[in-house]
Image (cartoon, rainbow, N blue to C red; front, side):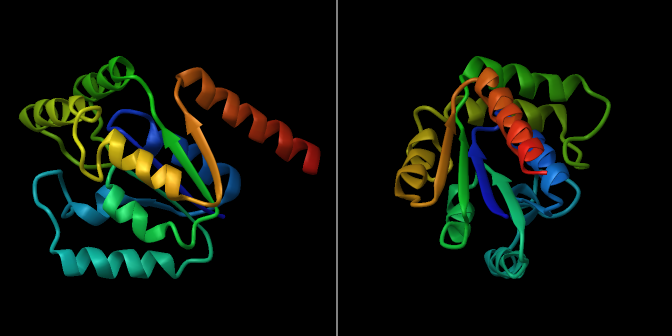
Length: 174
């Protein structure tokens, strides 16, 4: 399985990737882990190192890539079989991001300061108006250009229905 999940911060990409990885026993490539230096969300990796990590992960037979970084997700498109775009409303994404600040555990085992979380929420709120590769517009371009199997999930209910349909399909196969 070679699958990519894109969407705004707080849309549920990491959660969905975990659900699919558990079902398909595929490794998850978190684009945050490629983009940011270990330990937090404050220091960007060197572009050459990011490129190396992308190429290294592409060598796996199976992978589930998830993240907001359209420019990185694009590097997986030619080998991907499936693209899922979590295009959820901002109100839900914002609630989920705010919840991260109230949880005692770090997101993706990385520390995020209150100030860093506030900056993320501010940045993510512009997903619908920005025009870069990490925006709704950028993700729409990736989605429209992709020629494999595509799913455009726009509500939390649609995500659960998608997972339920997979579960039903898998139980019918066995």
